[in-house]
Image (cartoon, rainbow, N blue to C red; front, side, top):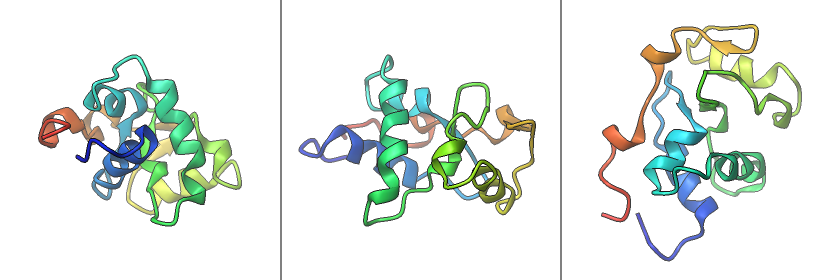
Length: 115
């Protein structure tokens, strides 16, 4: 990952690597980037990604319990759920079912940040 890009850009790079049909969390992205305590800042990045020229699959990023906490930033309260369901991910009461099984951890799936 390039050292000269902004934190938001680094977040977007990681979010783009989340495989189809899988989810990760704000905290997992923050930890991978070496800023474990900045999960909220990852959330802010996800909230701003809709204006980015290169698509970011922000719907695949949820909170550490699998809750769709960012759903109100998708242009409708059901859009995030619909996007996840289109990838085969079941959501009930704004929570990803089988979250632990579907969880994709960039710290174990990707080379160390900065490599």
